Every structure is written in structure tokens, then in C-alpha cells.
Length: 228
Ligand SMILES: Nc1ncnc2c1ncn2[C@@H]1O[C@H](COP(=O)(O)OP(=O)(O)O)[C@@H](O)[C@H]1O
Ligand SMILES: [Mg+2]
Image 1 (cartoon, rainbow, N blue to C red):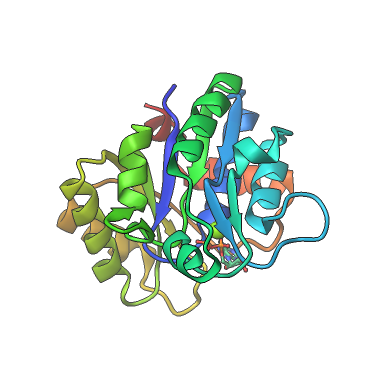
Image 2 (cartoon, rainbow, N blue to C red; image 1 turned 90 degrees about the horizontal axis):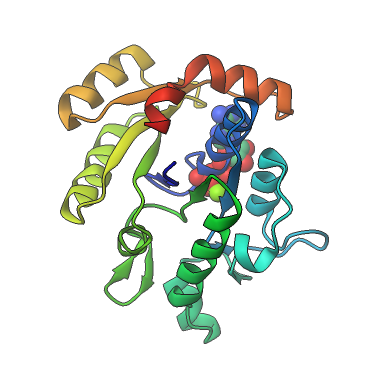
């Protein structure tokens, strides 16, 4: 079973929520799924994992893998790895990310890897999230929102994946904005314009419990295509 890189059209589009929901839904159909957040950034939590994203992801997947594998590098400022490096003088360790991913892959059937920001978030000079995905040798799923502007962001993201020869398994529309496009129209247009399948759309999630996430993701996402 192939691992999947959950990329987004931007930061705050819902990569963490979608990855968590997928982890729950896959676990419920008996896939041994692990999670990874190669680089995380922001204010460190006082308890548990430093990254709140990692906390949400591991709770959803119900894994207890060591933090140095799940999140090999944490920057305590909200910035890209590149900017964090320049500001804090801590260089992003790509080789550590790749070796941690390899180790984690041996512990589970598949890993859901949450990206950072958008697809061109810089890690090093001339080395972006796209380069990392390419080196991990896994396909990607693109999380996009439904708000006006999303068509532009989604096309740019998919064009970049094409440029870097990253297979795109599908798009997931995170329909949590109340002023977004009607999902039916957005799905039609994104599929026609990009040739990539929309695997489903997720409404506003009120309840992050296991049962709620499983119900929402099982109902709304084409998990079979995701696993193919
Ligand atoms: N489907 C959703 N339902 C409700 N709130 C959501 C949903 N998706 C995202 N959010 C909100 O948006 C914020 C950003 O989502 P998150 O998954 O952390 O984005 P990303 O990982 O892409 O930065 C979350 O903290 C949450 O408040
Ligand atoms: Mg996140």
C-alpha cells in the first residue's frame, strides 16, 4: 500500500483536519495507518508533541510513534523551513526527514504525510515541498478550500506537481467556508480544468471525535480510489 502526501493549496486550507479524518476512516477499515508531519512550525505546546498538528494527527491515527520519526524537525516560529533557517540559524535537515520516513514506513502499512503550507513552501534554496515529495517517492492528494480564488490556487498547485512529475491521486475540497462556491460546480470545473478527480468534499466539522470523523469521511470521500 502506497503512502500519501497530503499537500494543500495554501496554509490553513485544512490539511491537518483532512489528514486526521482520512486517518480515522482508514483505521476503521482496518488499514494500519501511520502519520507524519516532516516539518512543523509555530508555538511549541507545553505538553505532549511540540506541534499541535502532530497531536491532532497522532490522536486520529491512534499511533504512539516517537516524535523524532513523526515530526523530525520543529521550528518554534510560524514560518517556512527556509525562513525559519534564516531567522533561527537552524538548517532544515532533509536527509533526517527522509530517513525518518523510511523508518516510519516500516512500522505501518501506509503513512499519511502532512505537508507544510502550500506546494512551493521553501525548505532550502531551490528546494521546495515539491522536491521533498519527489524524494519521498509518494503520490499526493491536494486539499483545497471552496472559497473564490480556489480554482486559481488548485490549478497552480497541480501544474507544479506536473512539472515535478508528482502523481496526483485526487483533490479533496474542504468546504468549510460558508461563502464558498457550490461544491457541485467547483467539482465540475476543477475536474474539467485539471483532469484530476475530486475524491470528495468535506463540510464544516463540528465534532472532531472518532465517530464523527469516521462518519463524515466514510460518507464523503472515495477511499477506494485513494487506496488504489
Ligand atoms: N472541515 C473543517 N471544519 C471545521 N473547521 C475546519 C475545517 N477545516 C479546517 N478548519 C479550521 O481551519 C483551521 C485550519 O485548518 P488546518 O487543518 O489546521 O489547516 P492546515 O493544516 O492546512 O494549515 C483549523 O484549525 C480549523 O479551525
Ligand atoms: Mg496543518
